[in-house]
Image 1 (spheres, helix red, strand yellow):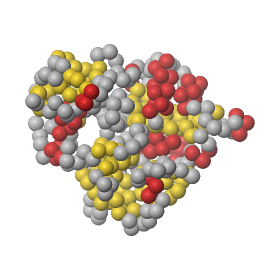
Image 2 (cartoon, rainbow, N blue to C red):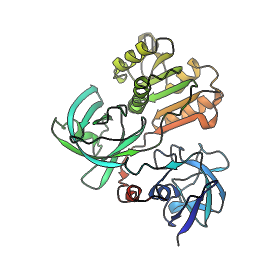
Image 3 (cartoon, helix red, strand yellow):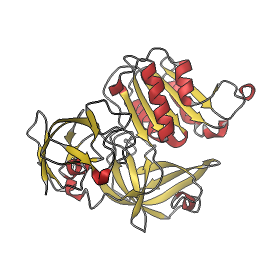
Image 4 (spheres, rainbow, N blue to C red):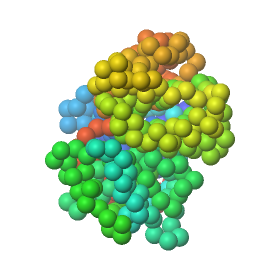
Amino acid sequence: MNHRVFLAGSEIAFDCAPDQSVLDAALRAGIELPYSCRKGVCGNCAGGVASGEVAGVGGASIRNETCTPDQVLYCMCAPVTDVVLQPTEWKRADPSARKAFTGRVYKNQRVAHDVSLLQLRLPAGQRAKFRAGQYLQVLLDDGSARCYSMANPPQESDAVTLHIRHVAGGRFSTQVGQLAPGDTLRVELPFGSVALQDSERPIVFVAGGTGFAPVKSIIDDMARRKLVRPITLIWGARTPDGIYLAAAVERWKKQWPQSFRFIPALSDVPAEDAGDAFCGRVDEALAASCGELAGHEVYCCGSPPMVAAVREAALAKGLAHADFHADVFVPGPSGTPSAELAAIASHAI
């Protein structure tokens, strides 16, 4: 039996099936709620339930450590009764934004021993609409998909650039090294809602490895729009070659000589060999290098343990819970949501 889902303080209402998350039901109805991983890890979709009852889809937990006591994870819960949701924010989805493209490999460059920079050109005359910080899905022949953040800013809409870490035994990443100019890949975008908030507050970006990709998109977008905010970038890697796009960082230093600070954090390098880098993990770098974070915003992109550690360190520094934004890189396949979310393109409430 379907239940009716309402958004508090609005006239928005939509149906949700018993085995469907309220997040997926909202997306199908053309309503965009905050989300990223869709696997109950990042906590971006956490929001309140003003009335009614929800339960975990398939018995899943509806809360994690990112939730406040009055919040649940919209990606993991389904309604048991009619419910009224109280999300942190929502907006109507742009029905023309999400599209599938056949991209053609333009460049495939190994920028570190375990990272490839893959640039895909879109078909002539076609443009991708996305916000800096969002991600796409590479659609594979077996029906599964792999998620990668766009590393280019939205202004470069005729192409997408991906930073792909090579994972031993990975279904797609093991093939990336063989891709040559002219080869094609099917991609769909955009997904996710880790995007820059309109604000003039100081901002701290924390990236681990290829978590640098969405951060690069956001900072390049800020540069294109000539935004000026105090920016601290902490980029973590095991060894110096993990800081694989130092040229981009140097470019930002020149654009914002007074307001941009870069802290490379190297976890597997002895202190005597670290040079100007912080010797340790990114959460330790944040704790050691940043003062009181009340009134700041923190954007953190990387693995679940890394994001959890950075969140704990940032909150200990006085950051407000709502000012921590996470893009959690969860390994493994993602179910292709094309059919599941196809109604977005044609349905308007």
